[in-house]
Length: 280
Image: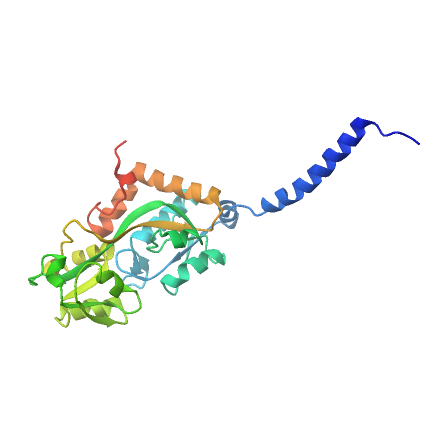
């Protein structure tokens, strides 16, 4: 019987091991990053909403405008040197944001999406581009100056947004008067059918600027309500794409564009996250 040399046996074992390890490794790396997909396609698909004043809404010409629209266009500019190489995919609401990412309908979601641990189990997040907190907006002639002044008062906001739970962390015994849309709720406050309108801070800043001296924000006394970071949402496990978006945001900070966009829509840099306000 012919003997098989030890070196031959080792070579055969090594070859078998490479086959066993190589196939799953190749399968795991077969799916290219969203970055490569976007570049090949020639445009980036970004999920947005059109109901967030200041962030993403429609102007008098029915065109999408706002802080997040400008931010998304800057992402396209960085990719293709053209801010118009972008397709905005309109989301039906807040609950549609994560599914749009998971299903692959969009490459990224830029839609006032706060970073929560539960959400991070479903989607990936970039570094934050803005800060979110909730505030009370009142008429300028209102006697209410601090959140505690609104104990037992009529509070309005949009139905189905879990606002009641958040409001109860800030004031006592509120009387809720909710409406189908933020615009209806805001109008109710302005027409004195409610004492205060409860809303996201950035959007509130935008509305306060738009309506001049007619409305103002109630002081939170240094205790912000439901503070969170807003970030770009992406597919999980796509670190190449997340790294690119983080680099793009850092570049916007260095160029001064991130500051300029905040000032353009909110009239302040107070909503910029701390990393983006650090001097060079």
